[in-house]
Image 1 (cartoon, rainbow, N blue to C red):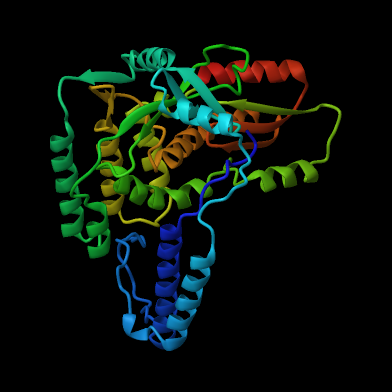
Image 2 (cartoon, rainbow, N blue to C red):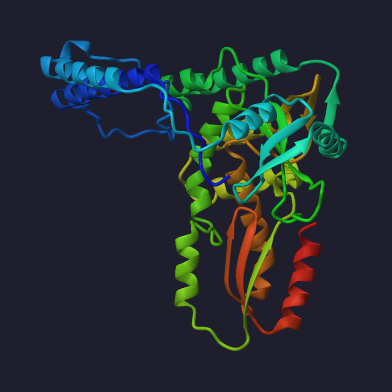
Length: 384
């Protein structure tokens, strides 16, 4: 399906949007009259802008003009038809969609890449999930819910950071989640590589939105991002790669090569990942030593308490970091960059260009196919 099915108009949602717009108008008026004075004071520790969403609403600034505008919109909404006679799906198609949604014998998931939708049997979805979770080097089944103990560990860690001043008041309030949600496991089918397989393998994802580690992961990602973007192989976006291709002076012996790292997120040993992160955090004087220790301890806390729920069982991830964790891409990037600094220099005469977007590698090779094959073999062996 390349289009969205027709839906009926929701007047209540429109009313909510109107009230949000009305509030934004008042906030703009307020801060136009009362600009925030941000003193340029020295900060010993590097802080973020993370904070709880403000509920401030200067209702005293609701003017007659705003009320008139609101009333005009409400009048127009009242004239709109909430349902439409025309529909871009037939009744049979709509009924089929509803049946698929309610069918507990199938699982509907987005494809890992490409934007497609995959319908799988519930039996296969369960068996593939169990296959992934049966990897004893990566996952361990638990005999109880560890959530309360883990929440206490995070609370103690945040309290210490706040006491030391590494976390300011607004960061501390934002990071401390009183009622966390339990992370949930699922997988996305990799049909982009295994399009002809009836049962494609899955990419494991842990949905940790609202979990005890979710906001700490966000905080750590904010701290790591500047170090990630300064690494040599960092690839920003498609535009950058197009510019590289356009600016390259192509010769007969140049080869354009793409590769990727298999299961990068789940294969990073905690020790190696932390070592790589520490290396980059200490590479310049951006952060104070105490804050570096705090960030590393936060990463360790997340990695060693990465639990989740799947079909009545709790699991702990033993190795790597979870796909779905906010700081995972930055962490994986630094791990790869650390490894590249030691491995790639001996091939500097062959690598005209080497760029990487997390686990997707792009490079231009000089020297012919035979030397490239030797490089790829060395790459594979040294990456294990």
